[in-house]
Amino acid sequence: MNDTWSLLSDRLGHYWRLVRADRPIGIYLLLWPALWALWIAGRGSPDAWVVLIFVLGTVLMRSAGCAINDYADRDFDGLVARTAERPLAAGEITPREAVGVFVVLSLLAFCLVLTLNGLTIANSFIAVALAALYPFTKRFTHMPQVVLGAAFGWAVPMAFTALQGGIPGVAWVLFIATVVWAVIYDTMYAMADRDDDLWVGIKSTAILFGRHDRLIIAALQLLMLALLWWVGELAGCGGYYSGGLVFAAALFGYQQWLIRDREPAACFQAFLNNHSLGMGLFVALLLDYLPA
Image 1 (cartoon, rainbow, N blue to C red):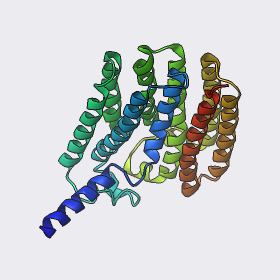
Image 2 (image 1 turned 90 degrees about the horizontal axis):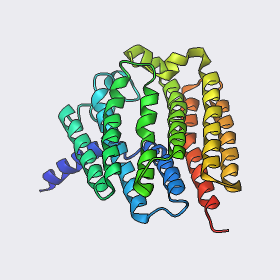
Image 3 (image 1 turned 120 degrees about the vertical axis):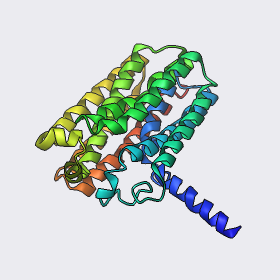
Image 4 (image 1 turned 90 degrees about the vertical axis):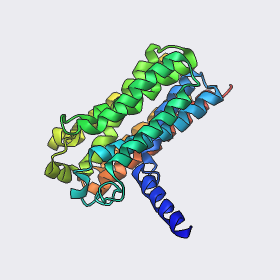
């Protein structure tokens, strides 16, 4: 009995690491745009059940995405020191198990979406397709970060369909801002891995941008701020939201300082700093929608 429990515990531990439950940064970066959208679509008072569905769905789909990502990268992760200990690369689980985890978690997320309206259910198929497609784009294009952004940002139009039954213009502007944001932070992440990616043949915007990476990231940061300002205008946001944009601009400046020498650890720290940016914008929205 003890041996059986030990084996089960070890297996669950491997699955836990497969879905990066010990590294929740991906959950945060996926969750913040969903919450921005829910609060704007719900005009500060989104339905509690819908919010719960999106929070749980975010956890499940990010976890599913990690599983299919490791399946796609199974022939590369073992060649890189940072990823060599991932359960699939280390031989602790099989490729079939990784695909199985992706399917099970995706189905659980789909079961949650079934409690919402038909348009949101239809959009969930796009979300799963984007999550499954992203890991494989790293072999064919230097801009997989755009696909990642679409996958992470698709919760935005889904939030509006869930609460308003349609997708207004403000939702698409916020979606584009989210895609741009993903290109920003995932390029920083890729800058930390650039040498390894070049060696194993994985493509990224960090490689595409080359020595112009900081300049292009800065341009994208300005573009995102402009798009978020536009979102605020369309949604009728006030002073607290404007303060959130100032906070975001300050963090973007800090991130530029971190990546100034392109040192891998500092680039990774800049990537992590985007969690604070997303949270700051959400707090600004919360305050903005408080009763006067």
